[in-house]
Image 1: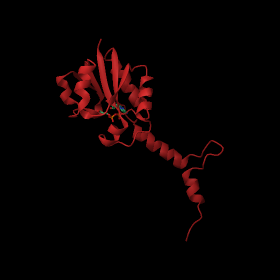
Image 2: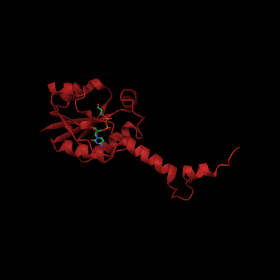
Image 3: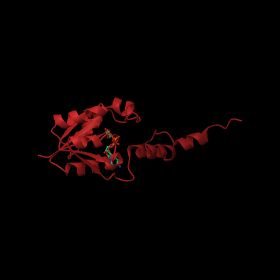
Image 4: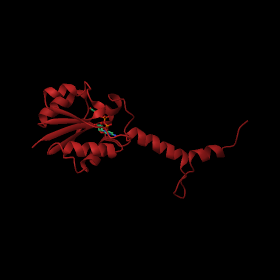
Length: 159
Ligand code: C2G
């Protein structure tokens, strides 16, 4: 039984995340995902507050068929304990972490694999694209507000 461990916020779950989880699972028999708590994502990783709260992100990850166990990530320092507690053989991360001091030291405890990052897809890109949509795309539901651009142009011009 080869046990794999990976870390991430996994907010607004997208193909980049799923593709990483699918390939990570294929490297072993059991995949553990450590999902960042909301506080850790904001305070330690300086990310925007996740769109989906921690428990929702965990529930979504548990629904992914490649994932066998979801645990929490609340500190940078927990990784060696996680490796020992869950008898991890390999830690897997996306290549945007390649060579990072946050992971390289784990080579003393288990195998460490970086998988190619899936291009053109990120949680922040989704946020930006949705904002762009909100600004330009007319609403489809009856009482949905008009796009921001329409509202702005409808405002009475002040001198
Ligand atoms: N990922 C990817 N391709 C993308 C987007 C993400 O391969 N287009 C990978 C990332 O490289 C990471 C995982 O998906 O391995 C989760 O990505 P994030 O939720 O952005 O996680 P991150 O903020 O990198 O957290 O302690 C480590 C951190 O928790 C890692």
